[in-house]
Length: 180
View 1 (cartoon, rainbow, N blue to C red):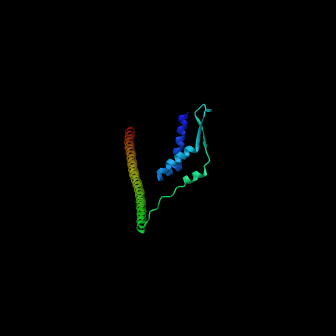
View 2: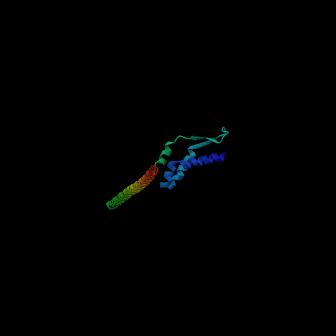
View 3: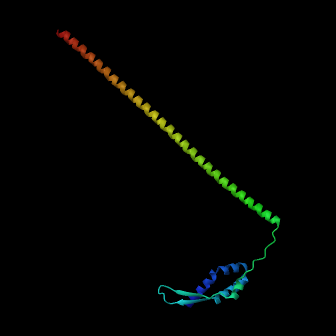
């Protein structure tokens, strides 16, 4: 249980944003803050939980002396010349132009793709219309040919019946003449 309390204490040290900031800027102040955290925090394990471990963290109020230690001076500023500022502005302007050009290229590609899609759809629609028209024309021609063949066969049968009827009438007339 004591090991987990120490581990929890260490975790609290790691989570401190102030210590992280100070360790990045001033590595020597980290040592002071770590010592301060150990002095300003008390961790008591509680054995009341059956499902796991529980801790009570007691933070001591900050003392007026510790406020002075937290005061961090800003790093010395570099002297920035007009040329440096102009170079940075030109670089920023170049980046902006490059980004605008990239966006315009992407838009142009998108428009070209849309145009290609529309052209392909129109071409497919045109091809479909032509194919449907040709199919319909062929079907109508086939129907016309079938109708003409059907009418020709009906006319042939009618003529055949008419010839047969004439033969029958002639035979009937010849029989009547022979019997009369």
